Image 1: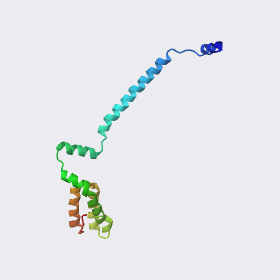
Image 2: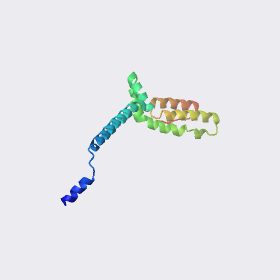
Image 3: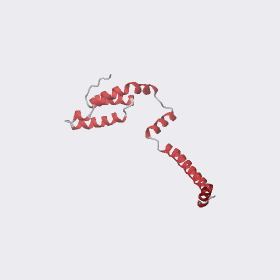
Image 4: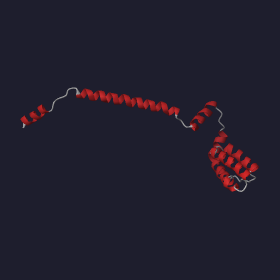
Length: 137
C-alpha cells in the first residue's frame, strides 16, 4: 500500500512555484477590490440626486424656514390632495384658456407637492385665475 501511495506521489509533479502564483493573484484581486471600492465612494458624492444638493445648499446658507418645514410635514398632503382634485386640467377641458392655466398650475402642484408655503401660493393663484373655491381641511 505504501508503494502505491509513493507511486502516486511520484507520478504527480510537484510545482513549488504554484503557492506563490496564487498569492500574487490574491494580491492583485485585493488591489482591484480596493480600487473599485474607492472609486465607488468617490462617484457617490458626484452622483447625488438634485434634491440632496438643494438640501445641502439650504443648510449651508442657513435660510431654513422651520415653520414651513413643520407645516409641510403635517398640512401639505391634505392641501395637495384638495388642490389636485380641484385644479386638474381635465376639469377645464371645455375652455382652452382655463385648461392651459390649470395645466400650468397642476405642474407646479406636482413639483411643490411637499412645500406647504408654495402650495398656499398656488391655492391663491388657482382661486384667482381658475375661479374655484378650495376648502382647506
